[in-house]
Amino acid sequence: MKRIDLHTHSLLSDGELVPSELARRAEHLGHGVIAITDHVDRSNIELVVKSMAKAASELNRYMDIQVVPGVELTHIPVQTIARLAKLARRLGAELVLVHGETTVEPVHAGTNDVALACSEVDILAHPGLMTPEQADRARQAGIYLELTSRRGHCIANGWVARVASEAKAKLLVNTDAHSPDDIWPASRLHEIVVGAGLTGDDYQTMLKNAENIVQRCLT
Ligand SMILES: [Zn+2]
Ligand SMILES: [Zn+2]
Image (cartoon, rainbow, N blue to C red; front, side, top):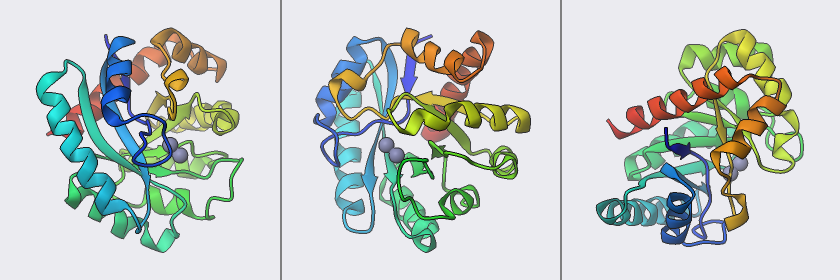
């Protein structure tokens, strides 16, 4: 099974690479699919989504890797999450992430709750010290929860793994890559999953979850 990463950044926000180089480096490391999910708020959502959708459609004509244009709604006021998620979708985003309440940043309180109530959201990224009730709502809403290899954001991986498992919410493991060194091969992501207290079987399930979400995005 080829690796799928559903959370990365290009220089359309604060990543280091143009989408073409990010996609090529991921392809070279054995990825079958990469979602490029740049940070957006009201200032840049049109520019980023339209640019990324254009780049993805061109790359998908010539490359073996599948490039999915997405967004990460980041640090936006909670009152605007649903509206901007819809707008992102309308502009051409096939995958909508919300930047969750990590333990290392002043993300607006309530972001996790509002994201979990929004039908346009696919993934609640690095949700931090989310509650068991929130994990249960993620399961009900079909919103995927994320373990991450990103420094700082990964502090709560063990907790997220535990509450998601208890609630039977679906998990993914992504890199949140911003630079070439952040694009990890499958073996290292397996360590992230096991390091969070889960098993090799859980890792396989997470790979299937990633495949399912790609199917859902592209249909
Ligand atoms: Zn984020
Ligand atoms: Zn991110």
